[in-house]
Length: 248
Image (cartoon, rainbow, N blue to C red; front, side, top):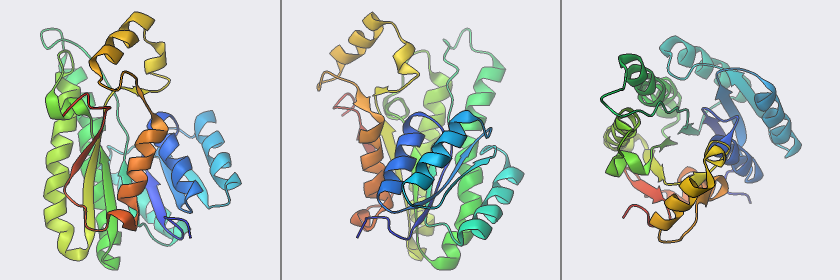
């Protein structure tokens, strides 16, 4: 039996990168997928087709994870389409990197809204379903810079650190209802975004990583699968770094 057979997972920001890798890996392990992104564009359409081709129910919704009303509407629609929600992965996120002396209020507000408020809005909307069934796994995609900070990323680091505090609080608040909450803190992961960096910058990152390479989205997805499945049935309130020992 596949690890997520018969489960329904919601993954935000799933059209590309780590979110897409998680969606596909979850589907390969039997989960039905309700994925979201801001727009139902060609990336969303191709993901939807790939999920269906894997033999599961898969649908991508255009929804703003940081908007309270949109999240409430989304969850109601997912329950109508899929019947329930067993797993929530809060993956939606952006960067607006800048030194603090040059960072604008808009750059701060937008990153906090998309990265951190979305975790609140989606978790609050989904918890009513999980509370009803007295089970669920919530996975929040943080970052190593949420643990250790990073120059030029005060807004991003703050949003990811806030996510960790939220994760631990929800684990304590919802644990009595058999709802688990954990965070994943990826390090330097090879995606389309990092693929645009100059080669010397990439090599500079590799030299800081004890494993001497970047991670893959699939390697992050494997940890997410562990947290989503019953393999981690007694794991809650934790932060698991996927960083090649970059952050210890």
